[in-house]
Each structure stands twice: as C-alpha cells, then as structure tokens.
Amino acid sequence: MSAVKICDSTAEAVDGIADGSTVLIGGFGLAGMPVQLIDALIEQGATDLTVVSNNAGNGDTGLAALLAKGRVRKVICSFPRQSDSWVFDGLFRAGKIELEVVPQGNLAERMRAAGAGIGAFYCPTAVGTPLAEGKETREIDGRTYVLEYPIKGDVALIGAHRSDRMGNLVYRKTARNFGPVMATAGRQVIAQVSEVVDTGVLDPEVIVTPSIYVDRVVAV
Amino acid sequence: MSLNKHEMAALVARDIEAGSFVNLGIGQPTLVADHLPADAGIVLHTENGMLNMGPAAVGEQIDPDLINAGKVPVTELPGSAYFHHADSFAMMRGGHLDVCVLGAFQVSARGDLANWHTGEPDAIPAVGGAMDLAVGAKSVYVMMTLFAKDGTPKLVPECTYPLTGLGCVNRVYTDLATFAITAGGVVVRETFGISFDELSSRLAVPLREAE
Image 1 (cartoon, helix red, strand yellow):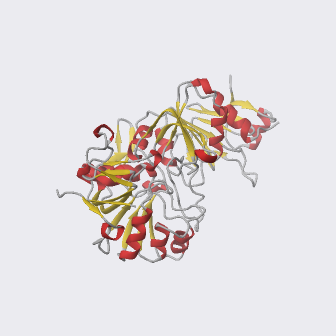
Image 2 (cartoon, rainbow over the protein chains, first blue to last red; image 1 turned 60 degrees about the horizontal axis):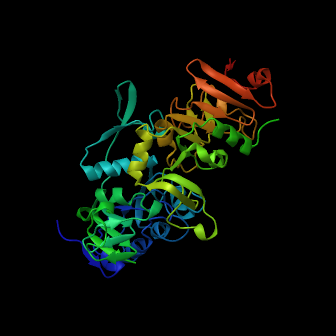
Image 3 (cartoon, one colour; image 1 turned 120 degrees about the vertical axis):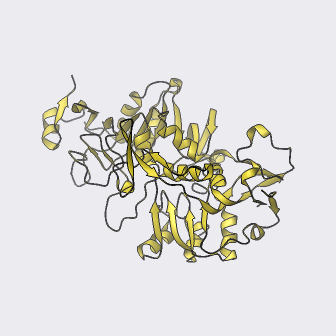
C-alpha cells in the first residue's frame, strides 16, 4: 500500500507497536533472529504480547529478556524447552505465561496460510497425538487429517541479509528460516538487515521476500 | 556382542539407498552421516531449511548463519540449496523425503512412535519437527537402545508415553537387534549377542524371525 520506510534507528522501526499485539519473531536459534529489534521492542515497552517464534528464548538476552520483563502473555512455539531456556521455564512453572506448542511444520504452514488468505487447512501432522486433541479431523482418501487454522501477526519482526530501498529482501544461508513466511503473515512487517543497498543492486531473480510484504527496514 | 551407537549408525547407513533424500534427527541419528558412502549421492535435508548439508563446521568454517536443526554449525556442499521453513516442511509432508532417522522413547508393535515428551506433569512439552517428520518421510527409521536405563523394553505392545505419530515407523535399529515393522507384525532382521528366543522372552511383543 504505502512505500517501505527505511528507518534510521531500531527505535524508529518498532515505534507504535501496541499493547496486546501478536508479534511474529523470526529466527531459528540465533540464525535470523532479529535481536536488535527485540531489544528495541523491550525499550519501546509494549506489553501483554503474544509471541510466535520457534523457540521461547535463550540465555538472558533477546526474546528471553522480553519474557523476563513480563511483557509476554502467551508464547506459541514448537520448541520452548532448551538447555538455556531458564527464563521461559521459570515463568511457565510459575504459571505466569501461557504456552501453545505447535509442531514446527504446522507453525510455518499456519503462518503461510495466514499470509496466503487460506481460511484453514487439513494437515496429517499430529493425528492421534495430544497436540490434535479437541481438533476437528476429517478422512480424505483414506488418510486422517487435522483441521489447522492460520496464525496471523499484528507485527512481524524478522532478520534478513540485505534490503534495497524498496524493501526487497534477500537472506543468508539457514538464517532464512521463518523470515519469508512471517513476512507474509504479519500485518506490519519490520526487517532488520545487515545492509540497505540502492534499488536495482539486488538481482530480481534472487529476491526472496518481495517489497509488497515489507513495511519498515533498519540496517543494524 | 551388542552394538555401540556407531555400529548402529553404520547399520542404518547400510540400508539407505544411493540417491536418497534423508533427514537425520538430532542426537544419535546424526552419527549416520559418518557412515554414508561419499559416492552414493545421498542428499541430507535439515528442516531449518537446507538440502545437501555438509559435515559439521570447524574453526574458520563456522558461520552463525549456517546451522543444522540441532543448532550446530555445519557446512555447504556443491549443490546445496536453501529454502524457508514452510517449504522445508512441505517437502517432508508432501512425500518428497525418502528417509528420516529418529530417536525414540518407545515404538509400538504397530509402528506408533513416542519420542517427544515423557508425559511427566512438570515436563515442559517441546515437539520441534518430530511430528512433521514422523508423518512426512516415506520411510521412518528409529535408532535407539532396546531397553531403557531401568531395563524396561522400548519396543512395546502399546506406547505409554504421549505419541508423536501413529503407525509411522518402518524399521527399528537397536543395540541388540534390528526390526522391521510390517503389516504382518514385528520381524527380527538381525540379532547381536542375543538369541531370537531370549529376545522374544524379554519383549512383550510377538516377534517373527526373518525368512
């Protein structure tokens, strides 16, 4: 709709994120994790957030620091429990945070569906397991599927490699992970990149996230 | 003699056909990569978004943007390809991945898999890609010890741990025997340091000898 905004600071990039927002946060481990945007979100102060990310924070920085500040009401993720997820573990055991565990592929596909305008989809993953309890199922061609609904974000915070001044994004190696999917599923998409280059520098054949999805870019 | 984990990994590798697309789960299954013949054209998939993954990175090769599903730094090979998470799981679920090798807490005689959650009340559930792999790969191979540390069998009539997938396991590689889960029941393919009769007496699952 409107042109991408190339921001001068991460504070400018996260300005206006509202309390109660659902925030999609990219990254798998530290690869592709928009750490500086998360730090800026902590400074910005939005609270009562629902965070959608593959993990639930590592160590005491980034997403873990956002959790530690008590800003997150609910986490939707595939793998919260890790050797260094003590912040989440403590909050969960104290009953201070809600958790929805989603199989990793369903997490990605539910966001893909949100970004692609799909109302819901039947998926074979998790049939017969505790994660499908209470969900509608349907037999199609002799196989059982579970009905899964999209996950939409009010905001997506993603890490990419480079952007041009229009907001076309390219990624680097396995740091791509959730970025392109979250870029489609977030109403407002904010990308941190290593470098903003002039429009025309990036080969159109290798653009992974076209500018239509991207609202704000900041180089860090 | 019972097998150690490296010998188990070698057995799994032996059964992977040349040219297969393969996902090796986190933990012991990653050892299978050490035993795949270099000239077999086997392509490793890592669900965080890469095909033709190379060996673990060392020294100056380490790049924080290039990791495997276990978050270990790895390397590229000629012919590597990167893709996003929805594509990565679509290629699994869509039946394009030939084999995945997973660890397990329990496998049932019907091939049900339990490998994500012990079910203990204070355990924090974490599933990752286990359920997607279990239903997605054309063949699911499990690599595990046949008995838990407390001596209870892990090949069981019914899983008591929360399930990862229903009827999805095709083969089980253990320290004492390898098994095929077939429509006709559990077939013992090979034993290591144990007789078929002793194996049968220690498991509550009806076993058949391979023909």
